[in-house]
Length: 149
Image 1 (cartoon, one colour):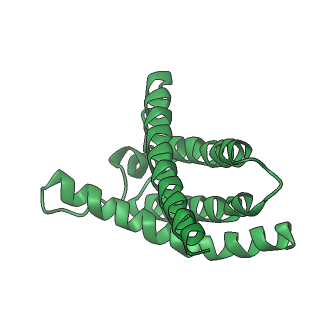
Image 2 (image 1 turned 180 degrees about the vertical axis):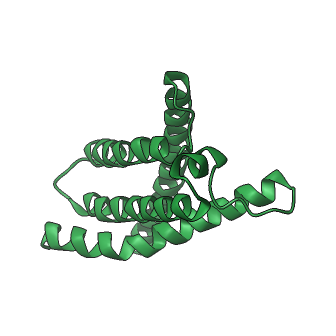
Image 3 (image 1 turned 180 degrees about the horizontal axis):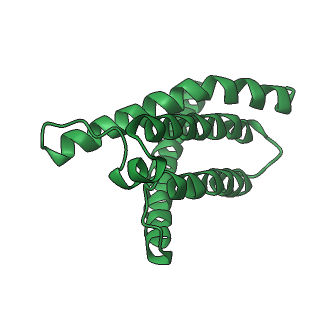
């Protein structure tokens, strides 16, 4: 397996996925607020960018970048000579280093030290919940395969 080529291919495929997830997140946030209005971007980002379309364009590009980074970094899980701890740590580091600056620029977090710490904490909790679910799922599948042998 050519790791770099696989990462590039996955990264390119991850761009539309990131954009779709970004749109769904804005849709869920709009529904959660409950005013019957679609909030395409944070009002602070709209003000900073000078218009709603500029804010949405930036947010769309940043969402694509997130999708690209997460997808490209997923090749880490196929590096069989790395331990699970190393794979998890490197993947977490890459995704956190992408998410935190993007959250800052898109104004998904408060632009304070406290806001960054809270955002990082939420990111870490969500990351490790998803990781734990995937770990347990794969462990169960492997156990079933071993029982069949």
